[in-house]
Amino acid sequence: MTHRVYFLNRLLPGVEPAAYEEWIRRSDYPVARACPAILSYDVTRIDGTLDGAGTPSVAYLEVIEVTDIDEYRAAGKAPEFAALLAEWATFVELAEAVHGPVVE
Image 1 (cartoon, one colour):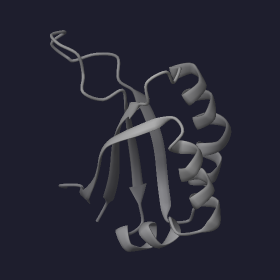
Image 2 (spheres, rainbow, N blue to C red):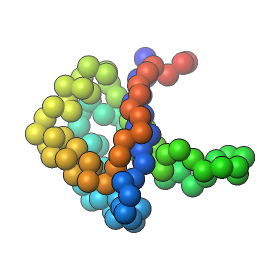
Image 3 (tube, helix red, strand yellow):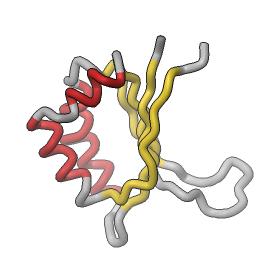
């Protein structure tokens, strides 16, 4: 069964999207994508609502497909992930982190 983790993120006030996206490419993707518990990982910039009305509540959506949620949580305790999360926290104020199985 496919299991996914989602992070719905807002940038901290004053953080430039270009700087955050460069950090994703330079640091986040290489570390996360090398993790055996992660099958795929992509970050999407949210440009607007589908109907064009209002402002989205988040600026980025992270979609992580994992082998198993417990394996993913355990991998997140590794030193390289602790350093990555410390860097991430300088860019992002987390709106919400959720997970669940894909309905097939």
